[in-house]
Structures are given as C-alpha cells and as structure tokens.
Amino acid sequence: MKQPIQLLIFCVFSLFPFFSSSQCLGGQVMVDVAVETDSWGYEIFWDLTPAGNGCGNGTLFSFGNVAQIGCSGAGLQTATGGNGYGSNTTINETLGCQTIGDCFDINFVDDWGDGGATFTITIMGIEQGPFVGSGTGNVFNFCVTVPFINNVGISSTDYEYTQIPLSQIGNIIQDGVITSYGAGNVTGTSMNIEVIKDVTSVYNMTSAPQNINAGMTSTFTTPSFTPTSTGVYTIIYTSTINELDEDLLDNTWSHSFEITDSVFARDNGVNDLGGIGIGGGFEGHMGNVFTISNSQFLTSISALIDNSTSNIDGKTFELEVFTLDGSGTPTTLLATTESKIINDANQWYDLKLIPSLYLIPGSYLLAIKQDTSYQQQIGASSSISTNGTCWVSWTNQPWTVSETFNFDIAFMIRANLNAVAGIENNIPGLLKIYPNPAQEFIKITNLEIGSAIEIINSVGQKLVSFVTTAKDVSIDLTSFKSGFYTLKSTSNKEVRTSKFIKN
Image 1 (cartoon, rainbow, N blue to C red):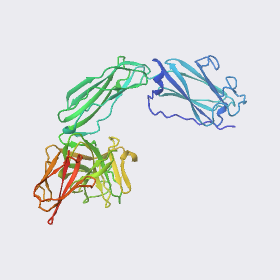
Image 2 (image 1 turned 120 degrees about the vertical axis):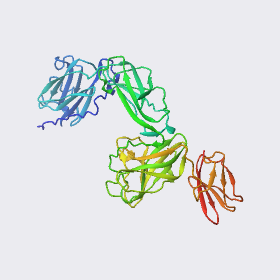
Image 3 (image 1 turned 90 degrees about the vertical axis):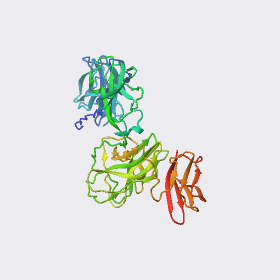
Image 4 (image 1 turned 135 degrees about the vertical axis):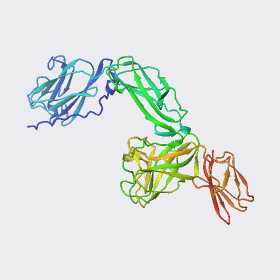
C-alpha cells in the first residue's frame, strides 16, 4: 500500500543553541523531539514513558492519533484521516525540562502495520537518532545526557579599524558577551580585559561578577581605555566562573590592531578577492567610510590596485572624498586627488590631495572613481568588514552598502592624515584666505579691485555676492553653518577659487 519512508537527517546549525534551556532549573535541560511523517500521518501514535515501563505505563506524554490508536492499536488498520499528525511533514514536540541522567522510552505504534515515522531527539544541540519506525511499532530508548554542566564562553566585537591615527583614537574597550553553554547555572561570572601594547601590558581590569543561568547570555562592561602612544595593541577578553569550567577552549577571545602616526585603514592588507570592479562600461565609485573624531588634514589617499584579472597597465585613476548626509549615505563631492598611472599588479599607490583637505569631525567616504573606459580592480579584504561602511554606486544604481550585494568586505583604500599640514594658499590660481579654518570671519588678500566675489556652499548655493573696492576684504561668517565653502573671484584677467572651512 505504501512506499518505504525516506530518512531525514536534521541539520545542526550550531553545537550549542541553548535558548530553550533558559527556562529550566539547574541540572535540567529542555528536550525536543522532531517527528517526520510519511504519506499517512494519521496512522501514527506514540507515547513517552520512563525507560522499561512499556507503552501506557506511567505515560508522561502522548502524541499523534491518540483518540483512534493508542498503545493497543498496532496493525488494526482502523484509524481514519483527519486525526493526529498531518502527512509528509515534520512536527516538533517539546518534552519540557528533563533531569540530566534520566532515561526514557519512545513507544511507537503504527495502525497500518508498515511503520511510517522517523524520530530525532535534540538535547542541548546534540541529536540522538534518527530512530526509524517500522512494522507495527518499536521502542526507542534515550537518556538525557549533556556535554557540559558548567561551561561559559566569551566573545566581543572587533575594533572596526585595522590601523588608526593616534589623533583619532578613543576608547578601544568593547563590551564582552558571556554565554552559559552548560546545563547548570553558573555563579560569579566575570570578564577580565587585558591590553597588550607590543609586548607590554598597559591595562588590566576585571568586571563585576554576575550569575548566569543555563543557556543565557550576559553583557559585561569595564571602564574605558584610550591609548596615548602608537604601536600594535592586542585586547584579550577572558571569562571565569566560581565553578570548575569544563571546557576552557572558549574562555578567551582577542583581536589586534595598530595605532599609527597617520594611516587610517579598514582592510587587513589581504587582497583575497582578485580585485573588485563595477563592470565594464559603467561609471561609478567604490569606497570606505572613515569617521574623524578630531579635526585634521587629509593629505593623501592610498589604494591597492589589483591589476590581475585583466591588464590595465597605462590606465589612469583618481580617488575622491564625499560627505555623508543625515542617513549616512554619501552625498557631496568634496575633493579629488591627483591622477596616477597603473603600471603593475597588486601595487599600492599614494595619491595626494592638492591642497590638503581639512576635515572637521564627521564621517567621510573615500572612494575610487571608475569611468566607462575600463573596469577598475580595487583590492578588497573579505575576512574583515563593518556593516554600513563599505559603499558602491554605478550608472543607474544609487549609493548602496556592499552587504546588500552579499559582499561583506573592506576595500583597500586608506586615508593618510597629517596634523601639522596646512591648506596651501600659495598655489597659483588660489585665493589667499586666513584664518582657515575660520570661526567668525575670513580675510582675503591681494584681490584685484573690481573683482566679483562669491561664496558658494557645499551644495552649490551662492550665499555671498559683491564687487570688491579694495585689495583686502573681511567677510563675516557668524551666520554660516559649519562646513566647507568655495570662494570665487572673477575679474577681467582671471577666475580664482579657493576652499575654506567654517568651524
């Protein structure tokens, strides 16, 4: 009448998914049973009893077609559809919190007499089975066993930069998360954080203790720590409990990064994707977001060009700087670097900004520009990423974070900052403005009398317009918002421009 059933081996996504254990007392764990039916689900009945009792004796739970089959209904072929389990489906039954070490029987009964169910028991992420029902019925025995009674593990979040200038550094201590992976409740759980600079310990702190129930997770914090010198920093997180931890392999978590004089990087230096491009014939950008915490000059931008998937020797490229809008999306172009010619594979190029760009606190996108003449091949690290910081755009595709396209990466584009650099006002064609940055006013010198003066904001709006009657003029900025502005002077001889910052 019926075809033999197919066995289903359930996939274990994680060794210890203990969320269901969180409601159990110490020494107990939640036990679940997955039942896979065949094309006649209504023919199945089973109950759970203490081991050795037999079907119907001391029954703890009963499932399936309880009304029409029961323990005595094996092979009678009297059950009808519309009762019990559905056909060709998997039903998850919860047996509740059971004491570790107790043993039970699954007493399976089939009304038709040819079997038709597969049982898989899950205890703290560990599967027992599958047990395959056959004939008129079977008895399947299992005991509640767990890998650990007392065990915790710790994790944290990587610092988002692999290199960061000392001028931009702040607190480097992240929260730690400790999870109780064992069957028992643990007490006195603490997190210790140690910071190693190069080979020397420079910070050590232990959190206040907490108690954590089985399967639960707690967040731990300690006082902040801000480094004061350059070097390689390693942050080590360690978890401890009052009880004897039965698995020490997950009690430590660490990561490292470098504090530099000037280099700002999100990539780890490993170009493992063979170069990323938008696609031939498209114009667009690919870049990383960097957050400036203290005002500083951006003097140049570095990029690794892969140049291995196709030969792009002799092609030129530029890098550009964009501001972000209130939603964090790149918006206004601030500056473009000098051009460089590509001449080798897997080579870093350093492109200067002339003049250097003064960045006030905020977030900026540094991106490589691709035109329609060839497909760019920017290097990218796939083993490190921070959501919301890697952006792409191309023809008819607005700015979008890379993870939208299933790319969790960091482009190999780096910012180079210089705290002592100045805005070069002595380059031919530039107006001489000071102070720059400014707060209340700017003074412009060496103007040609009769020149038309304009001040334009970052979105192209003209805020000031007048004709000068003197060689040196001052302009009141108290009504201006903080940001970047362009000053333009037009005379019969030439047009000169320069940028300035209003803090």
